[in-house]
Image (cartoon, rainbow, N blue to C red; front, top):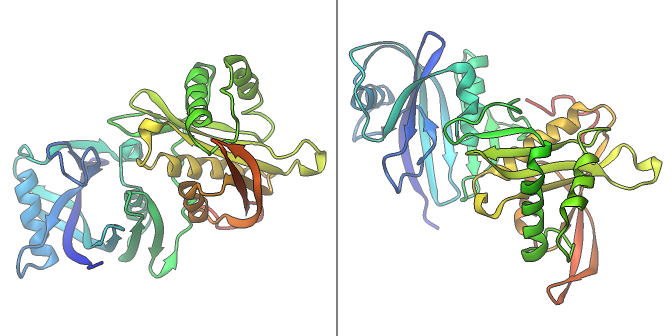
Length: 347
């Protein structure tokens, strides 16, 4: 496949502890639609990064920059045959009057609220770098073609993608995903998400939908004794959940937990599973009594397999044709991840 290469700038104007963010809502075919990003755009012929920056900021905001810094180079590999080299700037000096933007809504957002917005996964990484580093950095972000981040490389060194931000419990604003502990009010949503897979998928080998009473027992067995249960809330509804449950009843297995991640069918391909995986593994890493996380994946569930491999899980064996569903025998693959004694596992 032929690669398309492009060059662009992105700038975050800042004042009084806020960034100027652009909520991209105007263009239906916009790759950034509904996302919150900075201002900027693609180079025109013979432009330098600085010339492109000044022109794009003026066109999109009405401001003329008077003080700005070139903070880093971000290489985006889309997974769709497009690679973009983006020059990243911040600006703390500007003059003029803000104008409406034809690409979306310009809003000044408190820096401590940025993480609650609907951002690209990779953007969350370079926001942390903007706040924590003063030197120039090079960041490579590799996506899977379906808008999920597969790999991040900072100054030539791999970043652990379990290094998500600590946003559990944050408010859901403007389409942002809010991750929080599951509550009693979520019972029906949890049941609906799971029973959809029972009836339509191979992520579970249950054959009969669970009852509300059965789901209640399961709910009550979590969020205690090293068995967290979290939900991803999006636009006021539960879009998915993740849990760490008992691996086996025998006491010797008490430091091992089994991971489950389920996403509502209407919310797939939106990065929900990655957000849930990041937060549930953070729970595991930060619990000194958890040593090993195990997942049992039905063979052929390639989406789940790729997700686990992205987070460092290792293939630990296959049991062939162990179950029958939808008129065919199914095998199961075991994946495992050691989370104890992992200094630097989180960013």
